[in-house]
Amino acid sequence: MQRQFDWGRFLLIAIPFLWLLIFFLLPFAIVVKISLSDTANALPPYVPTLNLSEGLSGITSFFSQLDFESFAWLLDDKIYFLSYLNSLKIAFISTLLTLLIGYPMAYGLAKSPQRWRTILLMLVILPFWTSFLIRVYAWIGILKPEGLLNMGLMGLGLIDNPLAIINTPTAVYIGIVYSYLPFLVLPLYATLEKLDQTLIEAALDLGCSPIKAFWQVTFPLSLPGVVAGCFLVFIPAMGEFVIPDLLGGSDTIMIGKTLWSEFFGNRDWPIASAVAVVLLLSLVIPIVIFQRIQERQREDNA
Amino acid sequence: MNVTRFSWFNLTSLMLAFSFLYLPILLLILFSFNASKLVTVWGGFSTKWYVSLFQNEMFMQAAWVTLKVAVVSATLATILGTMAAIVLTRVGRFRGRLIFSGMIYSPLVMPEVITGLALLLLFVAIGLDRGYWTITLAHTTLTMCFVTVVVSSRLVSFDKSLEEAALDLGCTKLSAFFQVTLPIIMPAIIAGWLLAFTLSLDDLVIASFTSGPGSTTLPMKIYSQVRLGLNPEINALSTLLILLVSVGVVIASLVSRRAEEQTN
Image (cartoon, rainbow over all chains, first blue to last red; front, side, top):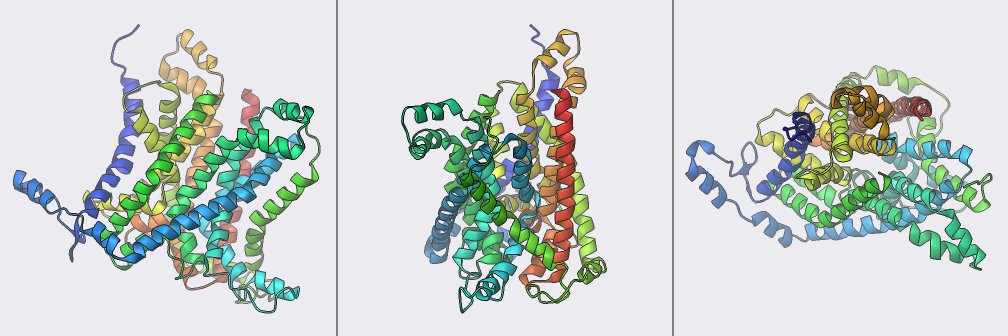
């Protein structure tokens, strides 16, 4: 066997590795650093900044100026705690709702006639390619008091006064379910489609009712797809900004919105970074689980 | 499975789900042809919003910036993402593999506000002026991970013995890649490029964090207009974007299907 150093292999790994190290991992280290800094009326708006020209004393004074003040501030002001709690609640409920709508859809796709399947799958994927912002915008025209939904319902005589949907959590749920539905349906469809049909037939032959066969055979076997799909909805929904901002109004506070307004509104970079650090810490476990599932799936396919 | 007909249950759930997915988009398109300035009241057919859109200097400028960022970042992301896909599926174990796969999969689900903030702080720390290039670098980083997922799923599903045969017949690893592997995974690479392109075209949050004065992208422009209220010009713009992307996706999937049929 050759024991020579394989430069091709080295470069192949090193180039994407270094790129991600510099543009993905290093930035998080900087976020942590800035979350420990203090706000300042300067450019950039925080102190301390590392001054290497002073040598070792510059480095020590840099570290001595870092503190947990921003995090203490997060604990002090109730708005931050409330936004975390609210994000958690909204992400959780909308994940459940997406599963409730997405499961029958994925199941219907997996059981559809072969010649229909390609086109139906394409119809699921197409909205995913269409701008997120545009799809959220489309709902504003539907949900507002003088919007299409209220006009339709009043036209049919079902309601007398317009329903207040926009600028409420309900609008945020609708927005999240609508935007993230394909993320849940696709992995779930992939699992359901590979499912061994003979197992279900066996359950039916042994006297199971179709409903019981579904709950005892199909559903447990589809759990990996359910879990993968739910994480794909839950994790980004936790930090969602566009949907609560455009559909939720000022009463719906979510952590992504709080971070955005700290950064763009208050120009408080240390607080915005501290918010990001806490959000990141709360997402580490779901992200690691998600990564494990992806790796396992890749190995199963290989 | 040899299902030839839909069951009534599956048919109903599919029809309901697809109406939920498509009705809002269809209504948006319909009202882009509305003569009335009130976006939700029908006032007759008109294409005047399309005319005023093309006369809107700000939109045209933002569209140009967005297109440049999308083309450059998608191309960079496709090269880096394909390399990363080969690393994940072909080179076996190496030190740091776990970190590597973590860095590939976590951007896929990472909330955009975190990625955007983190990248901005990096650019400030290294003293890079914010503008066209910082958006491009940020989009490359995000979208390369999507390219990796698309390309690696193709790499694991095709017959490895083809590559092995080329190596046995005396090809170097490099020429085996360019002559055997690359043509086979080309449809996935094209699909990956398109995905990266549309993701970059769509992105509001990361672009807002990493852009500077004079480099406003189309989604940023749309967002600032939408915050002011509904605007029929936005409907017209959205319709054009939806049309562009749909045609692109349909063509790409037809091309890749034909390519796959030929190789299998």
